[in-house]
Image (cartoon, rainbow, N blue to C red; front, side, top):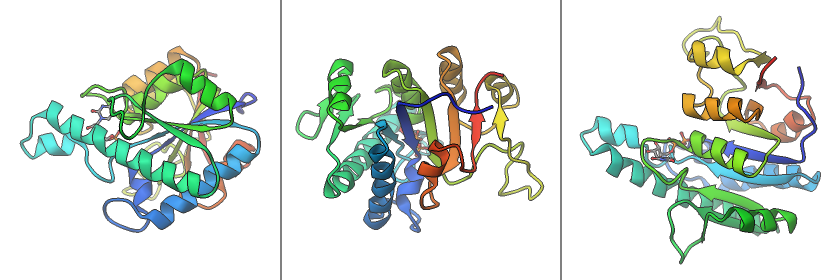
Length: 239
Ligand code: UDP
């Protein structure tokens, strides 16, 4: 099973990859490395939409577990994703990649609101569009935001760049015998609760036939390898 031809992708990066080697926050040097990966992919002619999580700064669930109101904590998480988006925009523009940030929570002084037709125009003009603040509502994650934007923007695939090199049948950090899937169906992911993305994001991709590619973004050059079909990855799609 391989990917269909890809012209436009949505690249979802977990917030934690922006930490580089740190335990928290944003490592500008590592964000610069990530930006180079994005540029290399863009230079092959791809149209790129980006969604970045906020887990390196704040997660609503963690706030709620510590006694905060969940919705309030989730809004803080969404604001964290905007900070990450601005950091990535900065890094991309420093290497000459024109970039626009569109946020699902309006904040006119720092970025545009999400306007699909305007985003289309940006892509046509060769700009990278970073969608921030997830879906703009609490009780969701940026995975759901990524699936939603991938559907809305007619992306050919959702690439999830994370710290692990694919989807395993159990947690590879705890179980050394865990096996990585080369390919797996959406229904298996949902039935076995495999750690890919949250269930609503997987279901949205399934219903809109958007393949999900899970790979490690921490290794240099991996994004380009995955896009050329040579990298280590797991593809989630129907048989
Ligand atoms: N969040 C939210 N609604 C959304 C997207 C994000 O409430 O549509 C909040 C939620 O609290 C989440 C946090 O923002 O924990 C950061 O996003 P996420 O956990 O998806 O980041 P990642 O794990 O990808 O770094």
